[in-house]
Image 1 (cartoon, rainbow, N blue to C red):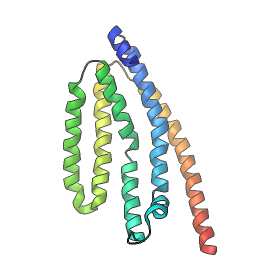
Image 2 (cartoon, rainbow, N blue to C red):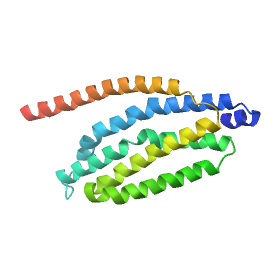
Image 3 (cartoon, rainbow, N blue to C red):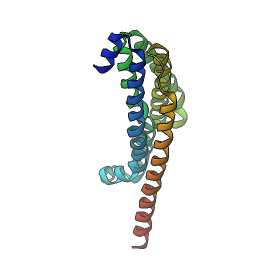
Image 4 (cartoon, rainbow, N blue to C red):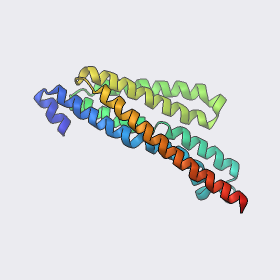
Length: 185
């Protein structure tokens, strides 16, 4: 509603500023979330699923696929934000057309990557297609809505990357300590 009010007043700068803030929040939350999912994918799958006919190999394959999907969490979260920006501006065709481009890219990557990567190919292609869709949407919206704050977005990305790296190091240290402790027991 806030974006629509800005757009109705013709205040494109406010639309761009609010979209920038929303995208900064996406980066702040989704980057560590995606990396966190990647870090816990294998231990979580082993705890939840590895029993009966679901073997250790099945758990490892499932965890790798979850990790590949998780690499696109930031993009999956950014797409709805960007689409709402277009809708607020009354432009419903651009996100639909760019969505079709993303579907075509996803299909082409699926058909290309399924052979060398098996089920991982589907996860990788979905993450890549979503990332490309974000770039296309953000580029088109930046020219349509007024400027997005790219410098602010990059600053937030840098800070989030540093915090995510620290989180990852701590998570890996805990996992390593757990594995090392289990092997000495």
